[in-house]
Image 1 (cartoon, rainbow, N blue to C red):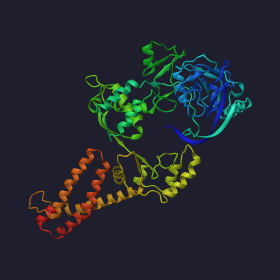
Image 2 (cartoon, rainbow, N blue to C red):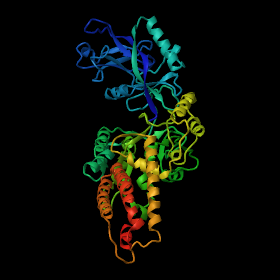
Image 3 (cartoon, rainbow, N blue to C red):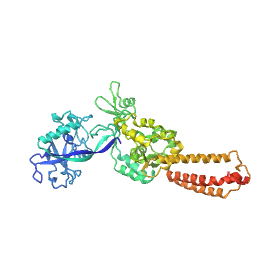
Image 4 (cartoon, rainbow, N blue to C red):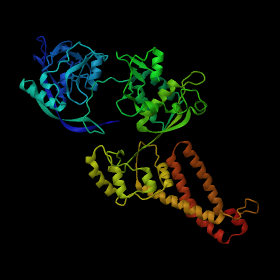
Length: 551
């Protein structure tokens, strides 16, 4: 969620890696050619992958290459990750700085060498870990002196130049690629190794999958079950630690030797492990992933871990409302954590809710996701109360992480809302949201729909005034007296009963858009445009019995 992938114009460098021990390829060459868009990462290479079915290289599996500039012997491994149809068919493997390479490294027990600092500079020496993440000396992490301390892109330039000087740069080709950027800082993100806390999700996911498969939890619309199943069948262990200044702090403490103690508090840790005051403990600086904290919501808000009256009364709840984009991040996590921690009277896992109602994601009128950085967010309160153009521009451009975008956002806002946003009222906004609540994934926000439903609310207000004006403190037949229903009266009652039936059916099926449309059609077209007009002759000149019936 915090990474934005942008299509960028880059380059593909083709580098020559010499084969070790006099070995040659099927074509008689004493080297392999690998391709990379990040040549600086070669300092952390610990292998070269070829496809085991590739006739050009399969006989080389188990042999070695000599990593240029570094001199490290690294193995040639056979792995399906290497695509015979792409490039040369040889892939350099840097487990510490690429997600795919990390998986290849795990499959072949390759060491991992972290070559970057947190500031994106080349380290003085690489940090070497085995495939389980433990510090290791199985290979040297030495980094050649000319590249130590260089900023990553400066190191790229120097490394390419050195390959060229040694005659190991085969060619450079223009290449379009997706580059990950931080959505706040706007800088290129580098995958790298760090110590983190994880939740083993496989056993949790099994129970959570069964709850939906067995119908204990139902998705509305039902097709979103497929999205849930897709995530859960391919679930990975969940990293729950974050390096932020806010959030629930990780309840773990370390002593001077690096031993880890987990507990609700430092006092509890000392009591459980019989640690005296002479033992210095330091709490982990990381905080829990927001989705972990919010995943505990259904029961932690009801007094858990105590078995409170509120927990017994209100858990599980009936319906939870969510957007499709956080089915995995929130809904799945709530199901997994609740069914792990909360059991019914028979000791069986209890579901957190019985129905998941999925709404569409409200986007701007162009279909773009609303975000502060794009300057296209519309505050619901501004549509309720109204806001001037000057205040709207200030709201959209103030305290920006990327202030260079402010002028562009200002111009767009002035074009879209030249007079600011008029006051529409709470009822109009609520009715608009209900009317737009289709079963689709996206809702493009339309101010004209809001204006239309504001007119509808005004229509309803005026109709109510007309009704009250002619019924308040009048004889409506509630205390006796003859009543005669006109043809119009009988017609509107029939229409009303059909409307109630259709409206109830729409609500029962969570079709709030249809329910809103049913109310709109009946109120505007039947009740206001026809019935109220047909009552005027009765009100102005009808008998007492006719008046009682119409009132």
